Length: 77
Image (cartoon, rainbow, N blue to C red):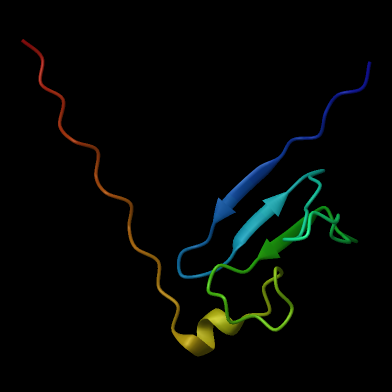
């Protein structure tokens, strides 16, 4: 029995999504996107010239991500 490879997606602050592992990526048209590496950076800023992959344009356009909202306090009786 083969073990599936671990897959992770990490959101970089003010940058791309880093996708690690054996994941099939598909474009808007549903076609499989070519991958030559097990780790890829996906654009979140929309300015990349090689979308959906990141080309570092987020630094040029000043892309900023928001912090996730803090968890609401939970009260116990």
